[in-house]
Length: 258
Image (cartoon, rainbow, N blue to C red; front, top):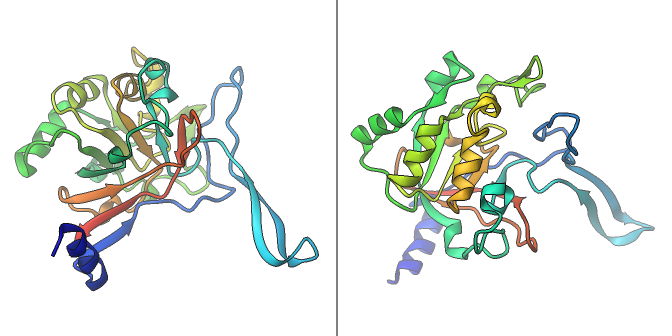
């Protein structure tokens, strides 16, 4: 049998499981809040167009409005100033093959439970490699934090005294992932790929600045990373093909062998 035929058979028989890493897109899901001098991002809104009534007797649908970076979403290089001049930097021009790739999942849940401002370091990733092998080029690195268990449902962004508090990588870690491991991108369960306190770093928000400047991608607001193995999962994450789009809400799926 061909590779694709085997894949279809394994999916049908349960040899390969499909794990949904996506939060439900809903009106109360938070977006990143910016200082008041900047234009705010829209949160997700929907309205019924018709529901088998006089407005449309046989169909049900919604109008929706949202920011490209709402809910579980993809960051393209054009999202950040450092990636604005790269080729194929928007969601409609990124090579489609990049939307299917392996993932390395780094379990930082204990550290995050103890410190919501936990910073992922190069040394932490190297220790992970001692157990699981070298991070392959072209892989996602996902930081598992079990954020649903840490953050309050009423304050998912964990804003305290006007500052966000959630984990992310430090500057050296971001450089190392790019320069030493040539990762495809970085993913997290939190509301941004950078740590909440990373606005104070130099440069601010290094995961955005360096990853997107290197043509890499971001995934955030994921869930269920605790259901993935450290290695072996394949991630399927095509964003909407928005012309010139800086990102997109999407459904992130993981294929995992049983």
